[in-house]
Image (cartoon, rainbow, N blue to C red):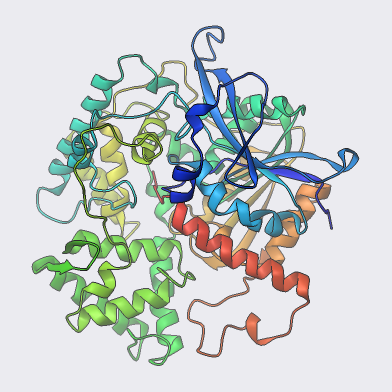
Length: 561
């Protein structure tokens, strides 16, 4: 048990937070090369750290990095340094995420059991400056991006001209980005520069080596850091590990290999749960799959308009596909996971589309003439980093059609995920000297820990195995769960290995597999873990794990490249 010897910095990518938006004005702070703390968000402290915008010319223009922390209560003799934590993206407001999740001490409870202090670093987006925006007004923004609060992938199978239509939309987006980037800031919004920022943050706290937990896109950031600065690796854990070659070539096909298995887990779980616990039940898994195919075909032929007191929209083929795909990311979640998905599909089959629409309701647009709020630019941030990092993509519509059809051989949801390739084909801002891979280092100052789920629809476990091979001495820990990253479900086993690694540098034995302490379709009397008595510490850890899963699902966008 560690008490409060660690501080945790969260490098998180999130969506909006009313609390973060209204309770503190970041523009009252002045960036400095030192960390100067100001009280913010009730119990937190905030600071703006000044770093180079262009690391090849560090004395030229600067950027400011927004940091929020909960001050440590640990004696100085016990303080072991900051841990930077990135739960994915790229894009969005990490400050908002830590205020929502970190303020309730959930992440430290998972990782370090009794840690009392953690801090947050937002990597060059949201409250950090310079601001990323492709648009002059919010109305202009909404013309191409329907909502900043949610992610809806355009389906490349929605119509016969869906690929060319999406290519045109994203090509226009790329042209607007180029036109509005008069000061040439966007080229510096890159993973290698964020890795350099992390080193600056670590050194600003008085430490030489990085301690880091990176999730999803955060795995790319962590692996890139370990490649650029192998001698600066302290404890570096990456979780939900992307195929790095796929990321740096904007080719998501290899990362889709577990999508079909994740969907099959819904069919099998629903059938096993029975009609009392899964409203979309059928006597066999194949019959449930056939019911879903029929329902999808019906909605594709005849979309359903929905009006609620707070919103309105259309449940069409693309919307339905996004709801199902999103459920694969967080299948244990009580709001959007497999149980509410089954309820929504059953209602839709009975002619009620409102239940399904309410799973991801699109906020009603209100016209504004001012530029979009600078902390709601997650899509632009995602595009600038995820499309600015890889090799330049110049695919024609015909080449993109071929890419999508090849990906369809691997994944039933290639029509959604392949849209990221189309997005990057339209983006033309690339810094010539940026890092584009490959990742890897023969010797890091400390070995890496990699974590992969048995079935992850966004980052297949194969990505963790492949990345581990690029860093000799690293180990892959497998969590036996469906969904995206270990955050998707609580696991006392996983938490124990996380703590051992960060506290003592102890790696699990190769081949270790951790069960999770929850079920995809819990019965009315509760899941397996809740039926047995647990020590208070373990119960607190599980409660923390369930809450952090819910918080991260709400605040982290599920972009996949």
